[in-house]
Image (cartoon, rainbow, N blue to C red; front, side):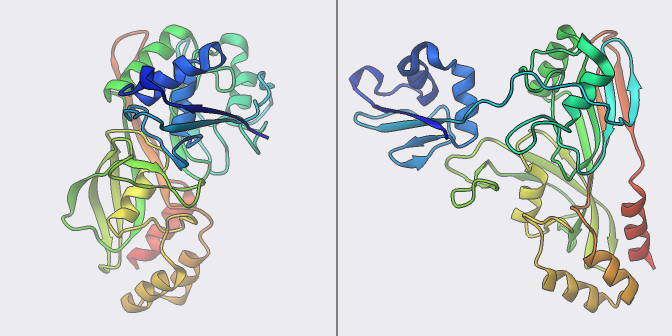
Length: 326
């Protein structure tokens, strides 16, 4: 069970940022960075409503509550889980994460994660600056998203990569198969994202309380005007960002169980385009969202030189795209 702390705002904290006021009210129990994390996770309620805006200014008699989830075990164990290593040196390791692999331990995933695999492969050289539960992890991919990730092997590398993630010089590009063909063929989605108010497992566009999020997209190929292969470049890195943004502009990702199109919409598009029964079956049976982090570039924290990596699409995605070309 989560522990819940509750407070009523007095004159002392009127006009203060929510995270700053909570830091003062909680004292030594919770750091400000920890509170900011809880706010982003939807664990803080303002007057009974979830509020994910750390900078929200408080008013007299506002009611605040903070739910503190029970801690997960502090020390993940090393596990011999195969890794697809694209590049590795003394500072960084670049990986091709497979579908189904969770990045770091958490509720429901205490082991069997990328962190467990990295601990086995790298031993105690991994950076711990990202928190004990995710050593070396600078950024992450959703469980059902495949593709490139970089992890730091020492604190200096971690600080350098984290700074690049913050100033957006660490570049990540994705390929996604979506329903319909976005117009214009090249554009940007600038829409803040927050936790979904009705479903805590989802994210959604929220103009008032969302965190800044911007995705640039480019249509690489279209298939009979019913589907499109889209390149997406992140300017920010919110949870489920590409999936949420593409759904927001009415071009959801094929195979996405959370934000994707209804099966009837996909079937209708396939029927209108006259695809073969084999292609229809292949599309309808695809087991996860068609989304791959195919390109990654950053300034190497050890050499200060720009490095870039690209990978091919997994075979099952290639086969699906090839079937759409017939």
